[in-house]
Length: 451
Image 1 (tube, one colour):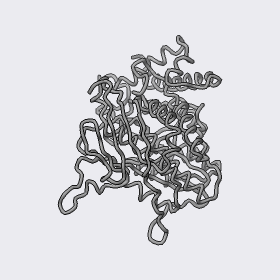
Image 2 (cartoon, helix red, strand yellow; image 1 turned 135 degrees about the horizontal axis):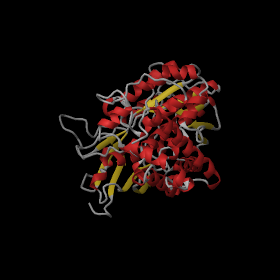
Image 3 (cartoon, helix red, strand yellow; image 1 turned 180 degrees about the vertical axis):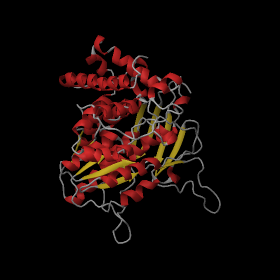
Image 4 (cartoon, rainbow, N blue to C red; image 1 turned 90 degrees about the vertical axis):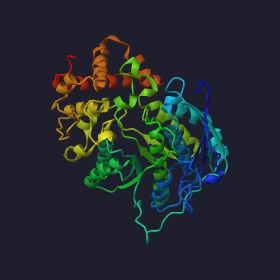
């Protein structure tokens, strides 16, 4: 594929409105799968990929009619996830950057066309791809909500906020703190099969008024090679949270609502550890610049949702230390998942950047976990590093970053991951230094810092 080649993806809930597949055209049915379900022994459209069919049932279980605007935002998010999944990076000229053109039907195409520049900027920052968005009429209308006489509904009565809930350590601390502060949150999760079990286990231990809304997009390819990087996963996470915000607001007659995105400032900042890790090869899910762009989009559409990260200037270890219910945190810590490789074996590896920062934070917070990391035949991190050529890159990147910390301009360093407010640069610099210091303390304890 040439450098300027553009992959076109057409989205529609009615597969009969989709063009035929070709080398540079991918048709995707959204919210339904009747294109690929046999009728009289024949599959109507074997060339059609699908996404989003399980989400409709989950939305109906909220028991409240949603606005067309939030449904449009979900449609856009699912379209982005479809493109990110069904268009393989390996087929591009540089093996990474894709030129993607989306054709998306929405309920208010004039409104969405007016903020197209902000959307494309946010998507480029998140994925590193070049995006072209085309909005047209004919969007999917909000589904009719279920009644409680025949279906189990999510109980939204009395709730006052929404919080992202991944099942990770940060999101667990986030909801513990919210409950201790007497918030009544709806926890929103984007759940793979293994994620859901862990999330439910954590939620079972939480005490206070809360509810849980979880969904999965279930992308199904038409046979093309798919991409596994999933850099845009956070856009569907946020879209589901916006759905939750709309439902909570309407159920409880709220004019405005807070959407909490609990993430430690060190990870959120996503500063490159080495030159090799600069850019879209690392996740940018909660980077302040990206969150600011999403907030701008929500404001322009008129959602009256305020995105808040209470831990923007705290390290993960400081989150642990300041948790408002340490007894509960110690009880659930083994059920939290931080690993970037976890879905491969349903076991945390112990040597990726998120795992190392997790262990450093628990070391800082004086919490002992019983998690068995995937060190193979080695019973310690030090032995794993000594005996394995593979899997050491992240640890070595952290060590190099720590060792050069006192010899570089840290303000410039942290700014490489994306634009930051100038007046906040000293705080971003400080959170980056403190985060690396926590990792240094862990590695010295584990006898790994000498490598």
